[in-house]
Image (tube, rainbow, N blue to C red):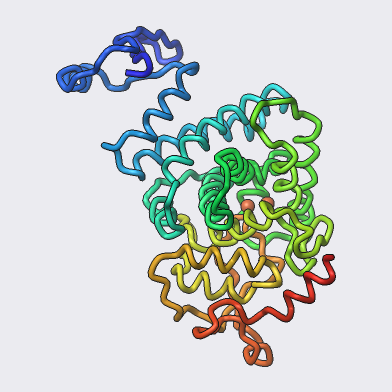
Length: 366
Ligand SMILES: [Fe+2]
Ligand SMILES: [Fe+2]
């Protein structure tokens, strides 16, 4: 065992008293496990040894990836929920604790995601139970897709960069902690006033991050800050807060935007039905060159196993669709007939038919 095992021997509901029942360094046999199962309802690992626990879990070959992800997700949610707790005051220390805790989760996730395709990640996400606080599940899913897509986009990506992509995904909506939960958990169409408030979250997130950052080895704060600030910028310059164009948007923010979009329309929630992977990609392809980066999107689609290109290619989602919000109904609509002639989703040509628009955007961005 790489860590000590404890039980809570307190008989009081509110007080906890932990007693070590198995020391680190010894071999835990099947008999011991059987005895623990019969005797105890729950075993504990100390906070200080959480990292050891998570890393031994992620390299354990006897556990399914879904089970591993479930534990890693629980650990990440614990940190995110402390961060989003309105009773708690946001402090530099709180942000520091969240980042180091989330980093442990992300580091363990790197193992699980390594070599996985977007479809595998999607399957794992589908098998996980979900939280009633949309931002938690969403942030974790975006972290997972961002890591998988970043690996696909940069074959020689370092572990540190993949961790940055994951942390950026986990924290991209950080600014929402300054917005009331009634607004951020509202799955109905928001009033213009509420949407204007929502639109401030990249700015809020950037400020919180900037004011509270302290040196932590191996954490690329400036890239995470750009992910937080730029994940709602659209490739064609129609996004917010600064209408940044094309490749002037940080690559990791463009990756986060694709992960964000895909998760919002494919992850099952209690209140809405989701699109199939094929329909989701077909719909997203109509946003290529507008909301999302074409090259990165092509890489994303090549990482979807057995993709059948027969999705709803006559449907699209408006550029102002907000993937960071829960939606009771996914606002898909028919592509206007005049535009269907130039439809972006073509079997022969996959997703590449927007080249001329993209060249123009690149030119403008330069
Ligand atoms: Fe967002
Ligand atoms: Fe989001």
